Amino acid sequence: MPDASRTTRIDDLADVYDRLIDWPRRLAREAPFFRSWFESIGARRVLDLGCGTGHHAAMFHSWGMEVVGADVSATMLARCRQHHGEGERLRWVERSFLQPLQVEKPFDAVVCVGNSLALVEDGEALTYALGSMATAMRPGGLGIIQVLNLRSLVRGPIHWQKVLCSGHSGAPTILLKGVHRCGDRGYVSVVELTMGADGLTKRTHSADFLDVSQAKVTGAIRALGGEVAGVWGGYGQEPFEEAVSSDLVFVWRR
Image (cartoon, rainbow, N blue to C red; front, side, top):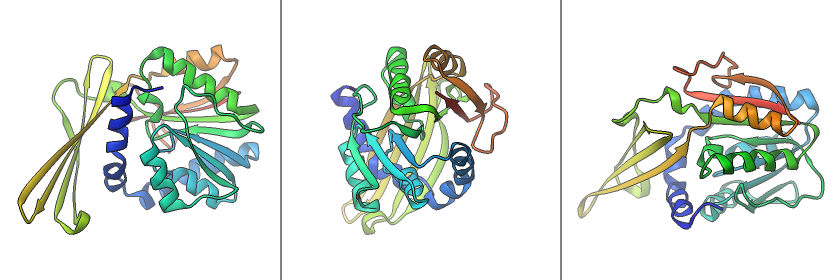
């Protein structure tokens, strides 16, 4: 499992994570990719590993699928239940990548997106996490992975990607999100500025992530007996270019 400090950092980002993303726009852009691949194998049961605040899992459920969302963060899962509900065909479970998920039968598809896989501790944990995906997947099933492409990030100074103004909790708030690369780690940093009755309040959030390269993932999948069906630089299935692609997307079969 991640250490306590890492889990705390993930918990701390739960609210900020949701506010930084335009979810309707993002899901509308990504939905055709998932629909096409799910339909290619007739998927009816999906596991979302590292589900975060559950927006992808809820979308899959809205398509009539039986979905389980798993995440190490109890805070993230509380938001899942609050915003998406829970029932027989949509469940949320607290699990890290290193905890085997006990299931009655394998899933048709296992997804791990939103850079979740890159939050593992090291290369050994990455290999174990991919093995967990394979174990949860039926023979002929589908695995989908999306991570940030660390090697496209600048080294050293933070590259500020996004500025968002909102009225969070009734007070004017500015969120700044940046990323940078240092060695074999990437870092996501968020500065939250809120103007309240007592003046300006500043909060900072940071999370590190692993270099999950095409070679590492491809090698691990093949070692598990899997077959890589495609590697792209985004959900539009554009070619992956290590130096410039912001994302790294894999589809693989067990």
